[in-house]
Image (cartoon, rainbow, N blue to C red; front, side, top):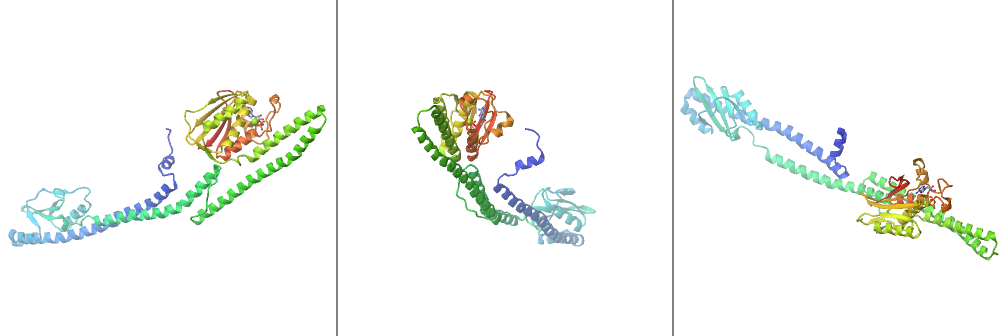
Length: 438
Ligand SMILES: Nc1ncnc2c1ncn2[C@@H]1O[C@H](COP(=O)(O)OP(=O)(O)OP(=O)(O)O)[C@@H](O)[C@H]1O
Ligand SMILES: [Mg+2]
């Protein structure tokens, strides 16, 4: 794997679907707000409470120390018991001991040092439930006072945290449900557009937010216009062909009644040729209009076309994969496209090799031949209707109309697939890849 730009990495990490992205947009602010609120607001709040509690506690400790100075240890002990302070031997000599995560502990120590004169050490570590304060008594040995921790700092804000997390999760879920409803129309529009691109017509009604609706309506208009064009083209071409056929039939009849002169045979041949041309035009005009999408076994279809070509006297090699899933295609149309490619290969290359490859998202049918091929700069031209390159060559094999590749190209596109012309590495002539989405 090559080095990637940081932006590429971020793109790879971020979700690609609309749902994922929307969820991210939704969750990131919620989590950020919660974090900011809890860390800033709660932290402050609990610091204040801790400071107040420890301040009150310091008053008690100071009172005990003053009583000890003035009335002696017995009176001090009595007072200490009354306010639940334990007086005893220091556990530590001096210095402060606390756990790094004990945030309020820092405040406790700070407040005690400020408000109780003579504090030389505070231990919050030996027992987390206790505050152990060591006080210097000048001439006398140091003294320790132990108080329960609850009197010094506020308890952890468990309840508040639980409520915050719970409401956060709940709100995110609610928002996500609403969001799903907003995203569904977009996904339906995408599905309809994708299906239409593949030549399938699906039921679609614009719905959802205003913008999605207007995109949906635009799509419907566009689809109607494209369908209109296709229909118009079919009607026009088939109309013309049909109308021409009637006079042709009359001509044939008239020719049949003519005396047998040499010109007659030529005329009959011309009429035949014209009829063949008309049939091709009709084929082109109809395209796959008569053919519906069907789940088809691609291997059987390819074998059938190859068989037909072999029966017509062509030398066609066939290479099929071991196993191929069924694909949703217009079988007659694909058959015609493949037939055109094979007949080209036989006409311009004498021999054809057909192979089928199952790709991740598509089916590829390849036709190769050992002929002269088509130079790269003329390939686009060759796909256009009524274009024949290099009229002079191969005339003995009969010349076509120049529709074969155009029809195949059209059929591929109507399936949402493609038709690509390449150099055949294996055979030296032309290689045509007919790719259909699965
Ligand atoms: N396999 C091939 N090798 C070399 N040239 C080709 C090959 N296939 C097509 N061509 C060139 O591309 C042109 C267009 O091909 P296309 O199949 O559209 O028309 P056609 O074969 O001339 O007539 P039609 O197929 O309508 O009978 C051909 O005239 C030919 O010059
Ligand atoms: Mg052809």
